[in-house]
Image (cartoon, rainbow over all chains, first blue to last red; front, side, top):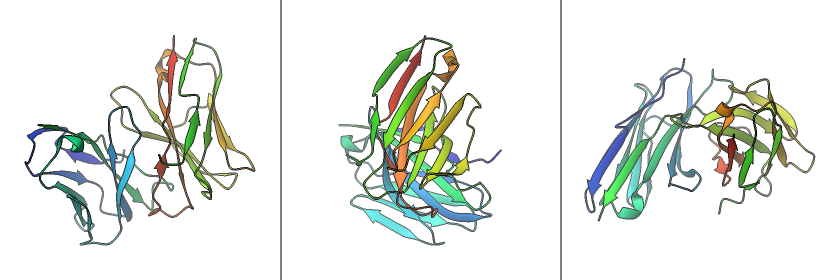
Length: 113
Length: 114
């Protein structure tokens, strides 16, 4: 069974705190890694797609890094705001998985004002 | 708004019944994906269609089937429904097949089987 692990499972921070979470995935057969943001009662929304080792993507206060050799990606949020509260999902696309994204269970972030 | 539409938004039905969920992809997108999200489960990939043909299959039960029509909309058929089929079903679309293509998710159909 393919393992995509995200940690921590949940995170509670105060407004203004910076935070980061991890996505671990098998490093072999790597093709791409997707990050999604999923707010309650809405649908998952794409944040980043990363393909190259050492890649770094940024969107406003959110950034992500990728290490394909060791099989992990970090997502950082600088100066968290209550509107950042959501579940953050990662999903690798691997060559040997029949052409599909494998979603992790997500990190649930709650930002208190 | 992702541009992907799904109907119906909510569906309540009884065990043993059959339902059809519908998805219209974003304009120009050729790939459609179906996902299931049950309680305590992450997003589970069910099946993918590309330009009318099945391209990838996940943990889709034999009681479930899907198709993509010439106008590129897709339908997911769930039959002989069981209580455990209650879940949120998402459709997503992307332009093509490449693994780095962003998938845009629809609002989902919440299915409740009583």
